[in-house]
Image (cartoon, rainbow, N blue to C red; front, top):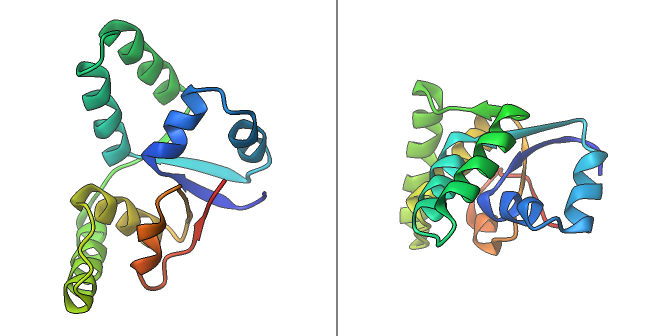
Length: 129
């Protein structure tokens, strides 16, 4: 699985769960990026868990070895385009997922996800493991 990938939150959780298929597939990627929005979702999940400190430490360790992409004005433009097209189709998606998709489009990355609803977004290249 070569290429440049942006990881959706569910793929990062799979990495945390040490899923062999996810780990080996990403080992062959040319580049892997993490959206800051996904980190927010992970931090939220850690804070509502019963193992807050352990989960926060796991996220911090993950970030230390990752390239995190943050949203900027160009991301916001992509977001507006995506959200309007989804509105026109009558196919809303969760807000955070629209931001993640906007980053993938902005940086021309393949979005690695387990959520089929990303297929509603035109021009977005997705892949699943």
